[in-house]
Image (cartoon, rainbow, N blue to C red; front, side):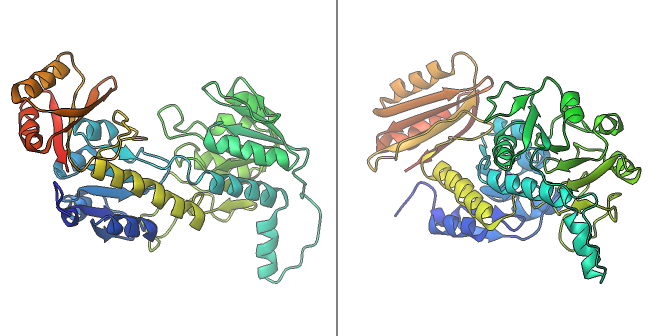
Length: 408
């Protein structure tokens, strides 16, 4: 089928070993796909993906302002994970490039890992297993606890934190939490007024906050000193949330009873690089290589979710769930129409200019959609085929235009 832009010329570059289901979805849509197993940054990233229409990343490749400004064919970005802090979102929006992520897909995987870590730390399973592998039989109840009846403190009661809350309560734990926004407690979870209150009340504290200026290094030596003697700390959130040197000191001094850490301030860019941390070798410390969401179920769901949104963006212009541009859910494009997609700066008078150009051209408008945010606007016009390309060319002359393209 003839299309406004040949489907096989739409180049998709997927980095960081994104699940092959995403490759299959893009190829089934008729796009050309390059699949890379590692992360790229800087000039390497520009060389690999600078000519792509769609770029998919996980958490290691940073799509900086410089990359986005130089990747002049870029139409969409997919973060095949929860976070989007690896993308210069404002710059992408200023160039009419929607960014999509998968905020729900690995929630259950991370929540289950947290519960497993709480149980393993309370039973000292990793230390006991390591001793057995070394040929030492250490049958003792010393330091081992049930989690039933103990208090779990959750910092960040969003999608993952609230799921952890439900699972922990089902296991018999008492749950307290703190969040900077007003959220609905699930079950019998009790909201506390501050981070400090959670640290002082809990036998185990699990962190589920995004990477922001407010959360950077939010757990340092003073915060660790507030925790109960022998308490546990779990970080499956972001690497810069916890001062790992201070955590290592608290563990070595015996003030904390253990820790589980899945994310680190500095992480290897590939499996071939060595890993370094002051937490290595400490007793009752679980270290995992950023695998909180790395289950086959989660990765398959993420692959389907993000690729589906990007394919829909390319095929009909929908931006629903995009994190950086106005969200518009568009109906299927009728075969008798052309669809003109117009990203522009949200300033007074642009819509009037669009309508004037439509009137001057005498275009037959079958449908019109508009959505805005504080800085940007997205206008979509379905028109008769013999007006589509001419209207696109005229809209491109509006000074506030960011990007305009036609679908048919």
